Length: 265
Image (cartoon, rainbow, N blue to C red):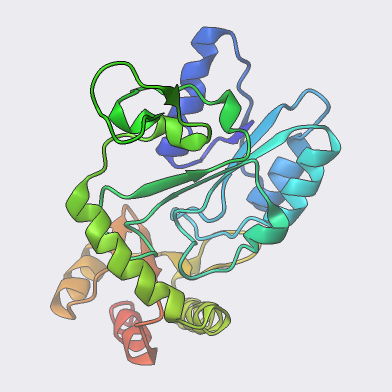
């Protein structure tokens, strides 16, 4: 099971399994939001629920603990993509314990592109798509037949992009020193201030359910907003009439005001 509006990297891989005979249920997001839509669709025939903690198209934060409880009740596994939240929000992964957790580092973890992780206790079920020298434990010898395959999920490792991982090490050391609870509260407050100001300026905040550090609003004059974003040197994403802004710990109220001024008449 997967949301019909999921990010394509968490949608297309599942759809390809249909060729192998798997039944993929695509769940449309209803007016109550993504969490409620998924909960209503989970039933005894569900074997796995794939969900992003936060999607950038509307900024809704899925209640992972409720989805975890519902999937566990029917014996289904939970696949979580935390790319758009980890580094700002605290999904309480220790108590959530998803069956599969995937995250790319180039978003809110501030890592270079080319760094990603998959964490799972079900490593014995994983089949490497591109086995190579990193897939085996062989005492340091990289030629010939390996003595034995990696016992854990490392069997699915591929040769790393070395420069990306050097940068990731620096970024993660920085992130680990930040007060996680303070980071989350700070970013959520900035996003809340933006949504309130955008509504006052005539924009329409999008997304049902629990909001996140990503705020998405519908604007009346996208071309004008795009010009003003450029003039104000505000980095934001505008697709059609949807304006998306996201806030990290290094942002402040001045950044919020600069973004809101692009919406003013």
